[in-house]
Structure formats: structure tokens, C-alpha cells
Length: 159
Length: 150
Image (cartoon, rainbow over all chains, first blue to last red):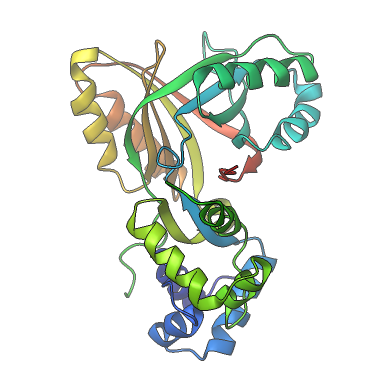
């Protein structure tokens, strides 16, 4: 399904996209492909669901999003898909998952919220809870970022 | 200080970059500016630290990786060392100290179950680690990191 050329393209795209008029041509050259072939491969990786998107992620604190809360709720299995779809529509939510629980930890529904202040996070969480008929979530704020990196897929293979 | 144009640029580049030979020309047209002006602003904003990364984002499951979220309860005096030890695993992409009883949360991408278990056994055995929860995803509803600037 994913061949060696795709893997090489994935490795190349794990770095930065150059801020030049023809960025794909420059990356294609590194991969030893024509620009057309490189773009064609990217479109196919996207169609197959391997590539989510090409674009930027901002340095969120630099951009003024100082309060970042991991919110966890208990959502019954029968309702979790509906709640998941509703909460995903909230633009300030970046990540939303149904997860396994653990002993003494009944929470299965997770959403990561980003706002300028903790008060703003609290009011978004309260609104999401009310809209979805849920009890208030437990909220855990980031106090220090120890690591934030993009995954390096297929390390150590011919690069 | 960000200008209105800077905010428009930062919002636009968080969308999908077109898969066409001149992607910035397409974006520039949407923003009613020139490709050259857009690239110039992007380089300046990047230099000023506004961009964490400008690249491709992949669907890890489609590439054969399993992701999980781990919550650790670590004795406060051991936390910095534990956090640094966790960081050393290449499959750890996010690692945050948080408020709450479980004070260190990280995501782990592993190519298979055996690798995941081995890494988690090693981390559970780190000095000061009192509890570890492996909160594997049952379903992903959203992964879209976008910060809309107004």
C-alpha cells in the first residue's frame, strides 16, 4: 500500500516546507521525482487518508492562547458518538477522543481546549457540558511544555 | 504587534496548503495580495516565532502506528528528571506538566503493542513515578490544531 517512494516522501515532508514560490518542486528534487509525480503522490496519500494536511501550526502561546486545558468527561457509550461529533465542531477544541478508562478513572471522553485565559476555558467547557447534557468536566491545565514535536515516521530507513 | 494582515495570513496558512505547483500564489490571491508579499510576511512571522511548524501532518494509524495518551503521577521532586526521561523516546510527541494529581501527560506513538508495553514498563519504573494510566484511544473524533486570530 505505502511503497518505498511514499515512505521517502513522508520522511521529506516531516521537515519544514520551504517558504519559496515552488516548494513542491524543491522537495520533489530531493526525492528524485518530477514535481508532477511528487504532487500526484501527495494527492494519493491524501485520498487514502495517510496525509491529513499540509499547512502551519502556530506557536499557540506566542499567538496569545495562554490557557490550554485537557478536559475529561464521563460519557455513556450509547451517546459518545453524538457528543464526539458535537464537541468536534467547537473551533477552540483541537483534539477530541473516546478513550479507555482505568481503575479509579471513569473518564472516557477527552477534549483539548485552547483560549486566552482559564476563565474563558471554564466558560467554553461549561457551555459544551450544558449543550451535551453532561456534568462539569475535570480540567487539567498545562503548566509546562516539556516536549511538543511532530512524529518522525519510518526513522533510520535510507535517508 | 500583529497587523490585521498578519492575522489574516496566520489564519490562512492554518488551512490546507493547495497541492499545486504555486500554492502560495493561490493563497495570495485569496488574501488579495501578491505571492511575493505573502512569502515575505510568512518569512518574517516565522522568524518572529509565530510558526511552530510549517509542514505535512499525517494520520498515524494509516501509517501503521498506534497512539496512546499516558497519565503519570510523579513525586514533585522527581518530575523534571522523569519528564526528561520520557522526552527521550522518539515516539513521544507531546509531553505536558499539568495541574492535578496526575501531573505529567504525554502521547506515545508506537509501531506495535510489544514496543508500547516495553516503553511503558521502562517509564513506570522511573524514580518517583507512583502511578501510570495507559489511556488508549477507542475513537478519534478530531485532531485539528487551529488557532483563529481575531
